[in-house]
Amino acid sequence: MVRKKKYIFSRGVAFYPEKEMQILKKMAEEGWLFRKMNQLGFLVFEKGEPEQKNFSVDFFDGSKEELSEYLVIYAQAGWENITNYKNKYFYFKAELDTPTIYSDPESYWLRMKKEWLWMLRNFWIYFPIGLILLGILLYTKETNNLILANSIFRIVLTFVGMFFVALPLGVVVSVLFSLVFYRDRTKYYNHPERFAKRQKVMRDSLFLGAIGFVLGVMISLILGETIY
Image (cartoon, one colour):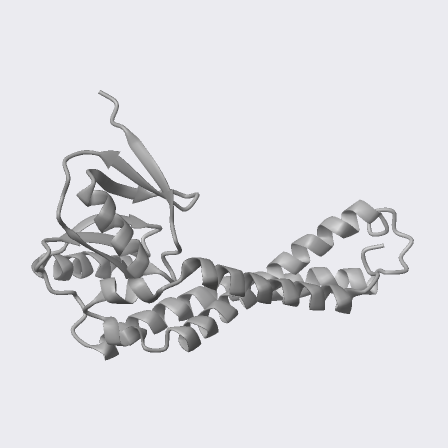
């Protein structure tokens, strides 16, 4: 028998794991059991028996050799591993009275710092690539080369270059935003449900979108007429 499935777009496991935990909990109470997050960023649920569980989303930055020990620590603390996303974000569930895996604000801050540094390392590689592409546009503005002088090619190159430059900058802005607007996040290390109520995903998205728009306009002004 084919089970019914439901898909919900993730709120952003990197910056809103507390919000994600509450979504999983609410869905489980309604009989929608979390199975995985797919490559498109959708949380996948299957219809089953309602559950009263707490959920945890954790970031893992260790090696493959350390993974088994990491999962054992969670299991010994009463947390059952459900699935993972790209072997970095691990989803767990436990009984309602199970203590959180983090015992103090300092350990939770360390988890946040490791996650953000990992993101910066992985996305920053795109920045020099984007600068190189935009540099090609700047230095070939008066070129007679048929390919480099083609307007469509230059538009595509501009879009790709700007995207590669904006991607790591977006991560930096998001991290700074989180540090400013949610600077007391570590105080809720053992009460993620309370912190989730303070998180305003729509407001944050609009604010970050506005910053992205301003950055895009600034880059466009710097480039000037280079795409033609």
